[in-house]
Figure (cartoon, rainbow, N blue to C red):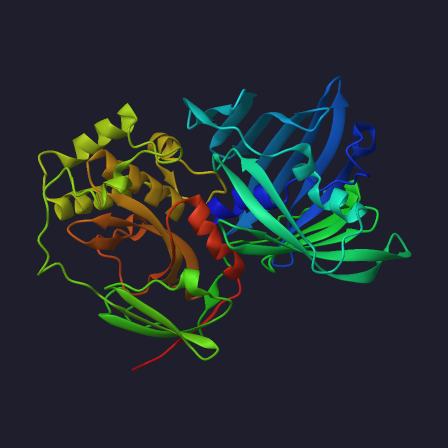
Length: 474
């Protein structure tokens, strides 16, 4: 779950500093913000604008301090965007520091392109991408806009390049209303601004004073960035357990959860069409103010299993390496061959890879920007690391595989449905595979709510910690 939350926070909370206009001297300044997840302090962020000669530097330095089942985790996301005095983007420097190491992204504008150099899992890569449309005005979008005294209903388009996603994200902001709030003991006029990031379909609400100061950002109702003093912002006590606090608990344990042939649930919460996945294994539909979920254990008895490598053009897209799934790296290719041996049967290959990941990975909780190359070196992590490594090995073996996220039932002292990540592989049809729990055919307690990479999984953010689940005994 945390793999897509962290980079998304960095994207949504791009610098929102005070500014009168594009007169550079008026842009200079800094603010500190406390970061909250579901009402609990999870970190803080420094945001500043400085002038260094003919370059304007816009900086965000965010620190996260969270608790994962009693284990304290620290993570840093640093981004510096550089512009010329006319507001044109010159370069972007970004890094993520987590318990597994440091990932670095550096982009430089060259004519009509952006040369992006990345170091992820110790592997250096270069990408030539289209020149972003982003400008300095996009970095201080709300502040400058509010200075123009927009009316209720007015809208503003913007774009921002995100190095971790390696693409430019567009969005639109709307003035919802004007209200008055106490700010530093003074009743202050505040604009309520709604923002939507197009590709993610996620809304945020900002409260900006008439002077252009962003007092608070609320993302999907669960993530809050609040203006605070430096001392107050840095007061973080690792109290937010992101594993337990975001789970959907059940009143009583589910009988034989992993051996059941079917499962019927009632889900309540802010689900929308983008979360409703229906396939052979699961069916989910809206019924009034709740959602009906039914899962059945599938069989491969009538399936014609293909031989590897898979060449079906409808699924070969899922054989390609990515920044975080380095399936073409020699270490991963070599390990896949070692595990596979002489196996050519697609399902048998998937089984072998699933068992190998389960047998060789040490389960730990860790807040990190996961990538397969780091996992193959450390052989430790939670569901994210298990699934990312499995997918990389599968692709290296010629077996199409992709990421899946949602919820899974976990027994124990606090039985409930916890956020989880697993995989889908193509063996003549798509099947769900869970290497974390050593399930070549995932059991019926898996509730798929997202499918795809980091960008697609970010659609889960609005429902984190906001679902309730009732088991229906048929």
